[in-house]
Structures are given as C-alpha cells and as structure tokens.
Length: 201
Ligand SMILES: C[S@@+](CC[C@H](N)C(=O)[O-])C[C@H]1O[C@@H](n2cnc3c(N)ncnc32)[C@H](O)[C@@H]1O
Image: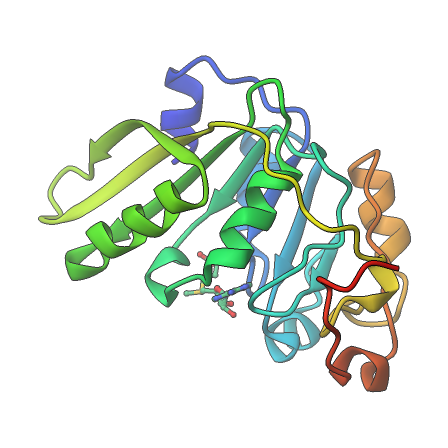
C-alpha cells in the first residue's frame, strides 16, 4: 500500500492508521512514509497489550476524536473486511483533508464489492485499484474524498469507547505527532457510557 501511495505521487503530512491493532502497520508507515502517524482501533485489548505509539481507542461506529481535515491519508491494512459501519466511513471522510484527502485500503475475496459499496455511499470515490501480484482476488484500492459531509458537532469527551492506550499519556503523543488533532482520552467508565452524538449541544 505504501508503494501505491508513493507511485501516485502522494506526499502525506498527517497519516491515520485506521484499525492499527498492535501498531505494526503504523510503525511501518513511520519508517517508510512520515513520522506524523496516529493510530486508532476499536479494540482496547489490542492497544493495551501492545501499547502502540500515538494510538487511541474508538467505538466501532465512531465518532473519531480528530478535527475535520486532520489527515492527508488514511491507511487501513487488513481492516475493511470487518464490515466497517457506514458512520465510521463517514467519520474517516470528515477527518481527511478537504483539499485532497485519500484513503488506501486492501481487501480480498467476497468482501471487496460490499466494502466498495459502503465506501461509495460514504462519499469516497475509487481513484485506482491495483491487484496484488500473485494473490488472486486481493486488491489495493486508493480512494479520494469526494465531497464535504456535514456532521453534527460532537464533543470529543463524549466519544463512546475512546481513551488513551496504556498509561494515559497517549493524547499528548497523538497531538505532538499530528498537529490539529483533538484526540482526548476519557476514563474507561465514561468510555463505556452510550452517547447519542446526533443530539445538538
Ligand atoms: C487484522 S487487524 C489489522 C491490524 C493492523 N492494521 C495490521 O495490519 O497489523 C484488524 C484491526 O481492525 C480493527 N477494527 C475492525 N473494525 C474496526 C472499526 N469499526 N473501528 C476501528 N477499528 C476496527 C480490529 O480491532 C483489528 O485490530
């Protein structure tokens, strides 16, 4: 996927590694692309076990604890077959740069068309698709942010399931790595409370 990004001439400043898990994909991005990488994952267990750098937990449907337009590139390695819910795809769209944000993802098998349909419904446009050499039915897709989507405002501290990984120092780490980032951890009990983000404040 990094090769695709390079060959397309993209020069990402801020990168989000969506579904970062134990953070290995984020470390590869840091080494090969840019130091400005933040990660997020719905699995607190993965983040807590591995304590990847600059990562926060999120609820599976979002919202994401980042300001609109924060990221030039969203990277999703072995994530899209998880049937990412439509509100999360819209959140990823909101958090990418309005002047040309991209999302690069791989997918395979029967998951490809359903995931592409969900991406298009969330206003992502397929810019390019590259078959993975030697692996039948495996593709790498490069998506463009098609148009702005308005989202109701939601306070970061209302984000269900969001908290820092590890020792609580993660918010500052994410903010240092990715300027203009709102990442803010909440306590585990707050994170578990259910919040309706469509309610205006
Ligand atoms: C197979 S792992 C890939 C981890 C990492 N990208 C890599 O390649 O090493 C998929 C990850 O996606 C995360 N994930 C799946 N659905 C998600 C969602 N809706 N929001 C955030 N993370 C999600 C899972 O928790 C898991 O850690």
